[in-house]
Length: 293
Ligand SMILES: NC(=O)c1ccc[n+]([C@@H]2O[C@H](COP(=O)([O-])OP(=O)(O)OC[C@H]3O[C@@H](n4cnc5c(N)ncnc54)[C@H](O)[C@@H]3O)[C@@H](O)[C@H]2O)c1
Ligand SMILES: [Zn+2]
Image 1 (cartoon, rainbow, N blue to C red):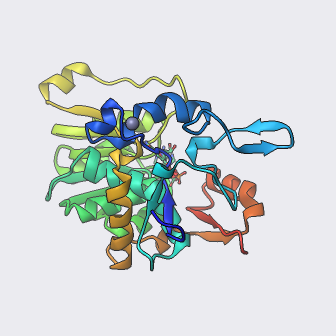
Image 2: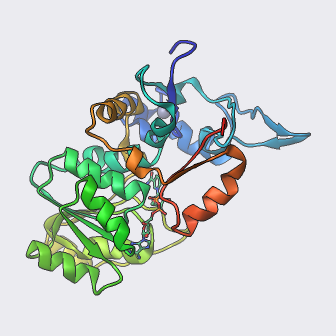
């Protein structure tokens, strides 16, 4: 990396030396999981953020919502010099997570049937990942029919309104028995359980959405064994940031990955709190905080 490079920040700045980094899984970096993220410090154990005398922490090694940040160098990923910085910011979380869950964690093969539960920033990126993987059928599920309709413009072949009837039955009816891959991109116990129950023979449920700490979900272990199904977790889409971020930006520049469609508004940095409230209330898809506004 050189001064002046355009970069995207990664919230798993991998150390490159631990067991999992060496095995090619930087999103599982042990040092990041055990030290950086939980303690909110840099690699030297310090923080560089202060509010008066109070020491602040580096949230997820990124310290976003700021005009300047001190971050580990391994968490800065250079991208194409022509990449627009505003929409490229989406790549560093929702897009890497959703696309990566499909292409890296699940390695969805061409022609597979896929269901994505939840069409927020992460789920819509999973839908796009499924399109890029040339999945055969991509079923988008959301409570909000407008989100399902948007998913259909991004690559979903079908949309199911979760408020209208049993989601699992609807997916089973559409696919004649269940999907090959189901992604829970919401993180409610109920939606994780739906993802498992909508699987066909040999299907894989991928847990992407993050439930509250301590949540417990139930599944039928006998059905899992008899039907050779799997449940897997996906952190940061199992991304390899130095390979994936530049590729995702190139796909955007080539028109093959839609990012502008995920942006529902732009606000100045000072509006961060309102933007988060709108996101939580489902009124915003992604709001770009633009310091110069
Ligand atoms: N695993 C990871 O590494 C990782 C990374 C980033 C985000 N996440 C998690 O992914 C999840 C999704 O994030 P997001 O930013 O896309 O969320 P979001 O709030 O933008 O979108 C959630 C969507 O789910 C829909 N929804 C809510 N309840 C529903 C239900 N019962 N049935 C159907 N649809 C429903 C909403 O209408 C909304 O469209 C969150 O839990 C987030 O914490 C995980
Ligand atoms: Zn590591």
